Amino acid sequence: MRSGFVSILGRPNAGKSTLLNALVGEKVAIVTSKPQTTRNRITGVLEVPAKAKRSAAQIVFVDTPGVHKPGSQLDRRMLQEVYDALETRDIVILLVDASREMQLPESVEPASVPGSAEPGTEPTLDAPAPKRPDRDHGWRSEDEFVLNLVRKLDCPVFLVINKIDLIRREQLLPLIESLMNQFKFAEVIPVSVRKRDGLDTLVEKLVEYLPQGERYYPPDQFTDQPERFLVAELIRERILMETGEEVPYASAVVIEKFEEPPPQPAKVKKPRPLKGGGFAEVKLPVTSISAVIYCERDGQKAILIGKGGAKLRAIGTSARKEIESLLGTRVYLELHVIVEEGWRESRGFIDTLDWRKQLEDLANKQAAESESELDSPDPEV
Image (cartoon, rainbow, N blue to C red; front, side, top):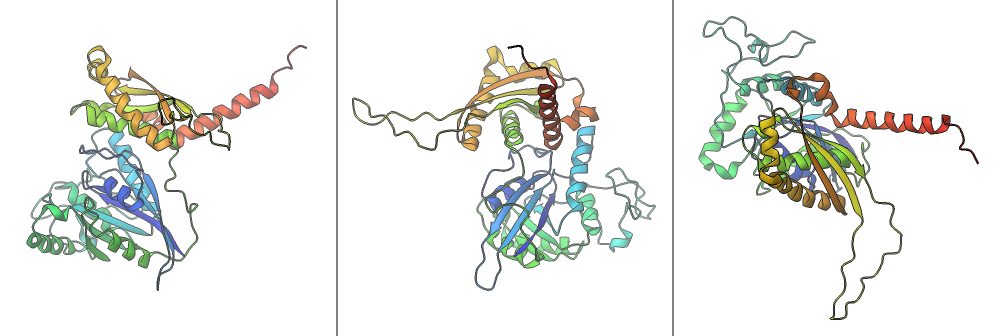
């Protein structure tokens, strides 16, 4: 049995979330055409069955936010998510968009990379470059920053070139050569995630490089994210899809209520026959969800609600369909919009958006309520 963690690294819109979903075979990360859609580390688990001359494997993929120059506290938190994902990894995938022109630095030895951090420190996008004859400013591009992150890794790094279906074949080789001049990648694998071209090869190669080990997750588990977080992300996905340029990046979603239906009887009810023929539809149980959409200004709130509440209804309707598909139940969804001025610069507020912190707070709240019930006096008879 082979097992290990594979972090997916790349610039915004390289297709990292699409790759993750395609490899896992489930929708574990939201996908839109807007950059910076992913804000957290997203884990997806792939169980690879054994076959001739190859042992079984479990690959734990970790999708990271797209690496971009931070302009807010939220952006800096997203960059920290990238660093955290690179701390525990067996393999790293550098995903590159073949259809986008890259701004590559000169081919230099890793030890002389401009802006390299001292041992034990992390580089930053704003780190000044050492004086050089040809320039004396900082990072020229985010492509250069990503490559510098890769140069500091001590594990196999796969160069995966996505969207090869969007370029001519003769353009691919020069792109590979220019990137190989920057770093000695363990493997170079061109793919088209949209057409699923090259994904089987990618999985086969990953299994070859994974260490021997035990499963990290049960065989039937495809993510470590709780349903509450997945639901919040599906709502945020619809906001990204339904609104313009400014509102999506100033929006955050927090689930305030998530009431699952009571356990259903083991015996499934048979559909009731109708007089005119056919059978009545068996109604599924209902999950009741209440979510808050935070934005930063009253104008953004007006856009999210829309005339007569039309935009908020559209977001809720489309999100509810996705959530019902995820949960396998009917869903009663309430959405509220609240203005939280400057939340993207508030470290405390951003911390509350982390689903790990939300679970911790929820567990503490439930523990406090249980303790309060035990300490309360017995009711009078």
